[in-house]
Length: 172
Image (cartoon, rainbow, N blue to C red; front, side, top):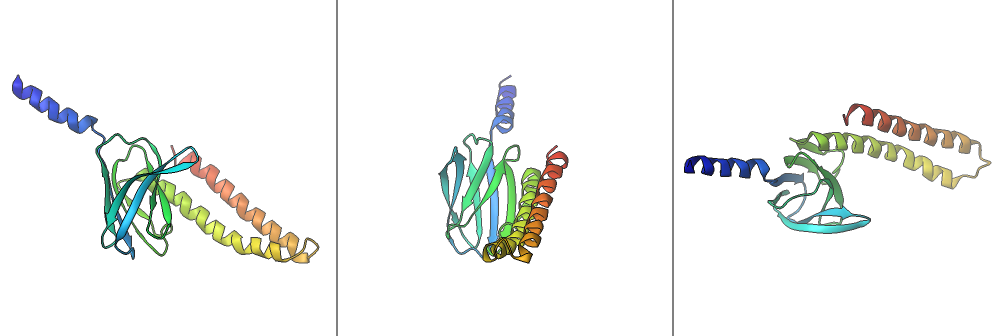
C-alpha cells in the first residue's frame, strides 16, 4: 500500500506539474542577460532575467504559467514574442540579424504556426514600406499616386486573405 502511494505521488507530480522549459539559441547574440516577460493589458512586465552565454539560454519555471503571449527582450532592446499555451517544453533557434525570418521551433506547433504568420506579414511590410514612402513624396495629382496606392491596397488585401485562410486552416 505504501509503495502504491509513493508511486501515485511521483506520477501525479509529473502529470499535474506545469514545468516550463524553453531552450533558446540566437546565433550572433553576445553574452548578456535576456529578459522574459509578459503582457498584462497594455503594460509589459518582466518575469525573469536569464543569462545568455554563446547565444544560448534556458527559460524555466516550476510556477504555474498563464497561457498567453510572452516576449523575450534582448540586450539591444530588440524583442520577439512567443506563445505559451499547451506546449510548455520546447526550443527555438534563430539568428540575431533576422530574428523573425530565421526563427525555427522544435516541439511547439503553435509557435511554428505563429511564426509562419509573422514571416508572411513581415515580408509584406517590407514590400509596402517603399510604396508608402513613395506616396509621401508625391502629390495626389501625380500620375504615379493612383498606381502606387493600388499596389498598397493589393498587398493589404493579400495580407487580409492570408490571415483569413490562415485562421481557417492552421489554427484548427
